[in-house]
Image (cartoon, rainbow, N blue to C red; front, side):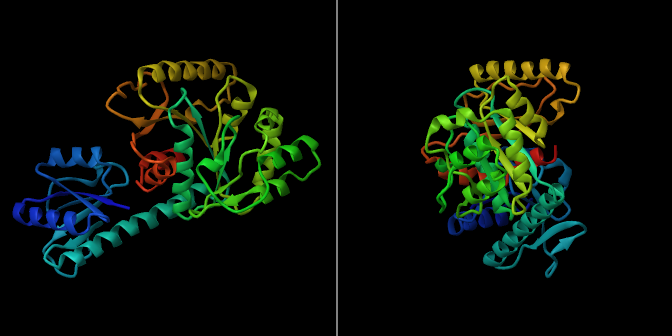
Length: 359
């Protein structure tokens, strides 16, 4: 994993040497991005989703001007100082390997803080985050799988639940076990009180720590999953103590099954990609939800947000004239397998998912 660092310093010669050395010798761990002005530095931090921002002690950039979750680090000539006021500090005249160690420790401290924040957000209750597509082919399942992986990477107990009619959790996760989603649906259909046991026994865990349930052996079994079944299934999941978060990946339809899922979710993420056709379809979906909300006073429109995925040079559309929050964007990744894309997204410390959790 690469830690992205934007650096702004008036000591041009020192900064050039430091960036060149780290980018050459530690390219697998760091990416140093040199800025020349305050405005340039803030822009680079935003465009590159920087993890750390380094600046001369006494510089005029404020932490509030940086992207969320970008840690503020001061370059100082004071030896033995690790903090100045509330900001992290790094002694600039030590050996470069020691500077790199300090930067890794600061980055790790930021991750620990995020873990504590996630624990406080969860607050001992299961949180359900549901991902639905605004249009076809926008990478909803990839985004949902990445969200689950990011939570697991931060020490959370998370269950990825693929409820798509043709979905397969096995495309994103691999683990040992014998049961599958068909066994869960069988228990739901028989209504014999064994749903919780079936879910627990069907759950597998991958190397990153994500729990998931493999797809049904018979694909048509998913078509039998109705709104009543989902209500019973989520009640059973609530009784499984080892799960803190549930990431749900499901098809969108204007029906009771989807409406109830949005109602039970802590947040619902509508995924699109910024293409004109996707924008039109996503807008119609959101308009439909607004119409439904006008008839149902408790329908949580304020907990529905937009995520732009697979954003490329052609992805120019943004829905900004409606009341739905855009939580962030994920850049398009080319020439990579889906599991590599999931890991890449999960490791980027995207504030997009953390903003979803706070809704």
